[in-house]
Amino acid sequence: MLVQQVHHVAYRCKDAKETVEWYEKHLDMKFVLAIAENEVPSTKAPDPYMHVFLDAGNGNILAFFELPSQPPMDRDHNTPTWVQHLALKVDSVDTLLATKARLEAAGIEVVGPTNHTIFKSIYFFDPNGHRLELAADTATPEMMSALDKVKREMLDEWSRTKKAPAHAAWMHDESLAVPH
Image (cartoon, rainbow, N blue to C red; front, side, top):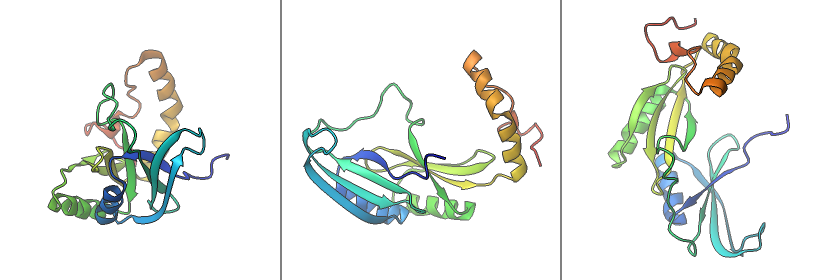
């Protein structure tokens, strides 16, 4: 396999210090690195930035750029807010629920938990407007096997019709049998 893991995922932030402190406080992420330059190394553009890196667990790094000389950041208004998000895995549904309570106690609005059958998740926004999801796996090996068997057929049908294939309808329709 060519790719070994995610080296880092980078997003823009409004304020690097506020962002680092928010992720440390609310998601227990460790601040691991800061890089600041007055010139972009890849393009040589004169564009000062602060680039901060946070440990998202298991060698995964979440990074942010603060770009004070650029216009204020915004989102893609042609894409619904629920689409673009970063999903982070937690170890259990209990941890998910405890984190939801902690976030809400800090005044952060949280949606969920949402039952996706193979995982449960909560959704909320960071101070930069990025949507985050915390997810706790709940799938059985049989569920994952059933999904694996139909993935290519589902993709092909979607590509032809642009309508949701029903191959895995059991995930959100309680009247259908769930693979055991």
